[in-house]
Length: 78
Image 1: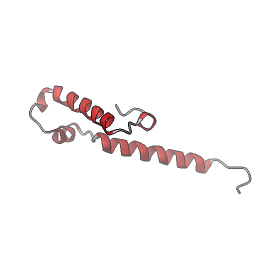
Image 2 (image 1 turned 90 degrees about the vertical axis):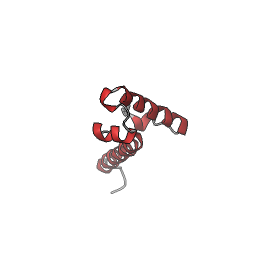
Image 3 (image 1 turned 180 degrees about the horizontal axis):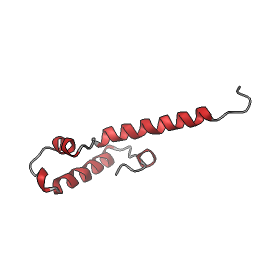
Image 4 (image 1 turned 120 degrees about the vertical axis):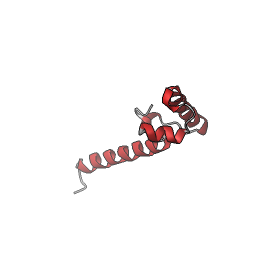
């Protein structure tokens, strides 16, 4: 679900809610998580919330963009 989130990142709350819903449905399918709160499920699975992963992906993208552009020598800007 987190593949290329920088490119297809949902901007509307309803779309983010649908993604969270899919993640919750998946964790509910696992037998050992019946009756466990969503946050506890994520902790046990060692998975971050979608919001944390979204922020992480954005930061990684910005870092990569900054490092690549800082390595490129622009003509006339020495």
